[in-house]
Image (cartoon, rainbow over all chains, first blue to last red; front, side, top):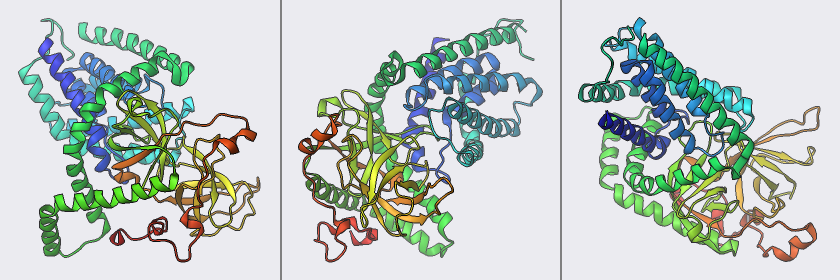
Length: 173
Length: 313
């Protein structure tokens, strides 16, 4: 269990580094993907809502402390919601299919970015234009979809090496 | 069912926790306990980001360049392959030449400012699509303080908003939260320039009837409580808007600085001056008018302020 937590933490840390050091140079029309949101989505898809909420909170707090302009906790709130939502719809999807991670990566990318942007705008801490919000949401959705197969492979590899410990009767299905 | 119930309970607890964090941080502002947590995170991350950036930046720029090429035009495939080969072979030389040219411009800008300053390297950018900040590899140990101005060889980059011992975070001039007192270099008309989150900035002259034109250059005016030394180039007017019924008029300004390719910058080591207006004149160091005010026959080292193709550098 400890090893799994450590590896998940390492994955989040690596994603944050890529997010700040690599992807700002590989943008699509000026927008970058959201690796931490993508990891939250795929962990929730593979391991369920409980893992989704846990990973979402850790990823969100990590994203928040790396930001400066918005209130700490905003990303965590959105990511926790995404983690739980994806974990909740998981039983209605075929997780082993290739379409499930792609569909969820795009949907969660769009809705997660839209939700975060709306919260930021509601708090009035940053000037967010409607056009910028829509553009960012669409591009993050598309970009995360492109990256989803690779990240999903990493999440599945982790799951094989360190399966989630569950009680015998516990199942989301 | 057991896991689903646990997930629901955990979700409720974490939502409560995040709402509490948001409330505390929102009310406390930049000096609250959670800002200290962010400073710790910046201090902990910056050494790793420094190392990672040196490895990932060339890769990122390579991919970025490929993306630009695809979006720009469909060129001859053989020529592009040849170009890629040459670029790969010349990667190190090109990078050194670019850095050399950038440092030369920086030295010129430092001399013009006549202010103590410290060079810095960008080691990370903001992870968010709604915040335009960068992390520098210098901090309080090098004399950097909050609200200090950051420039590069092209002009105004932003201002420092967070400082740790060995790193600092800079709000870029294109962030929507950024604004600076500025003026038109040709007419001297003062106004306020703000970021828009994209390629272009927005300039609002105080006099909506001022005869500003496309191509005019916008520079800092130095009226913003002394945060910005006067005369730092910001950008050129690209589009002049009409005066609204509320007597507002906005101009779109293309910044001189390429914010997608920031590398070496300079932090001007002059803290914001907070003094009564009548004392400001005696505190401010004199600053020569920038070359943008003398378009005819500029001195070689000043010719830089007139935008030129990169090839000329």
